[in-house]
Amino acid sequence: MANRREIEREVLGAIAELSACRLSTGELFRALHALLAGPLGFDGGCWHGTDPVTGFPTSTVADGLDPGRFEEAVHLEMFSDDSTNFTAIRAAGHRVQTLHRATGGRPETSVRYRELLRSCGYGDELRINFDHGGGRWASAAFMRGHARGRFGPAELRLAERITTPIGAALRNAHLVTLRRARTDGSVRAGHPPAVAILDAQGRLRSADAGARELIRRMAEPISHACAAPTGFLTVACQAARNAGTSEVRVCTPDGQWFALYASPLDGGGGEGGGGGGEVAVLISPASPLHRLPVAILAHGLSPRERQVALHAVRGSSTKDIATLLHLTVPTVQQHVTAILDKTGVRNRRELVALLTADHLPTLGLPPST
Image (cartoon, rainbow, N blue to C red; front, side, top):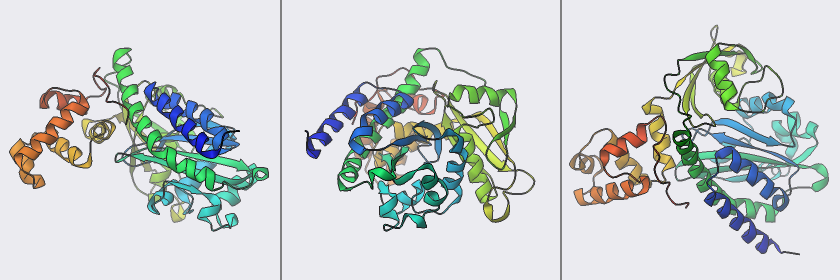
C-alpha cells in the first residue's frame, strides 16, 4: 500500500498532467474531483469558479450533494459571518481550513454546520481557496460523513500542497476557454442588455429573453425550473446584504464575459441585510474595463508586470511609466519585454488588443507554471 508521501507525489503528478491537457474550467473541476476523492477522503463536494478579481462564486460543479439546498448554501455563504466562509478563510490568512479547526473543535458554533451540514449527515468539511498569481480562480468544499471522522493532518497537508498547482491550472483554463471561443466560432457580438428578477430566496422570479438565453448558456445543473445560476445568485445576495448595488464578472462556458449588476428593489434587502426583498440583476457584455484585470491576471504576470501592463494599455510611454512607478527606463523596457513574451504578442498595439478583446485572439498559451 502506498504511503502518504507516495500518494502526494502521485496526486501532484496527475495534476500536472491535467494542467498540460489544457481543459476548460468545468472539465478540470470534474477531473480534479475524481482524482482527489480517494486521497482526501470526502463523501461529497462542490467546486466554484470565481470572479478572479473579487473571488465571488460565479459557477458551480457539485457531486454527492443535495441540489435542492443550493440556494440555502449560497445564502449562508453570503449572509452569515461564519468562520468557515471562503472570505473569512482568506481574511484569516489561510488557503485551507476545516470546520473542526476553524471552530476549535466545536462545530456546533458554526451556523453552516447547525443549519446545513449536520442535517445533511456531514461531520466535517474541508475548504480550499485556489488563489494564484494575484487571481482568485476557484474555491472548493469537501464534506465527510460522521462515520469517517474529521479531516486529519495528512489530508490538510495534501490540501495545502495542491493549492498552488491547481490554482495555476485554473488560471490557464481561463485562457483555454477564451481561445476555444475564437477558434470554434462561438464568439457572439452585440448581445443587448438583459434583466432578471430574483426573489428573497434567490429563485428566479422573472427574466426577459436575453437573460434566459444567458442562463441556458451558463449550462449549470439546476434542481428546479426557478433556479438561478451561481453568478446571478451571488451578485443578488451581495446586493441584498449591502442594501445597495453589487457587480460581478461571469464567463460563459463558450468563453464570453458578462458583467452582472444587482440592486434591491423597493428600497433594500430587508432588515439587517437579510435579503428580504426582490433583487433586479442587469446583464450586459463585459466592457474592456471589466475584462482588463482578468486578462492581466490570466497571463501570469508578476505584480510589477501587471502595473506596467496596465499603464501601457492606458497609453503611457516607457518614460511616463518609469516616472509613475519610480523605475528606470531600462527596467521598464525589461518588464515590457517580459510581458510581450508571456502574452505571446509582438508589440504594445497587439498587447492592448489582446488584453481588452471580448475573446482572446488565437495565440499560443503560456506554459503551465
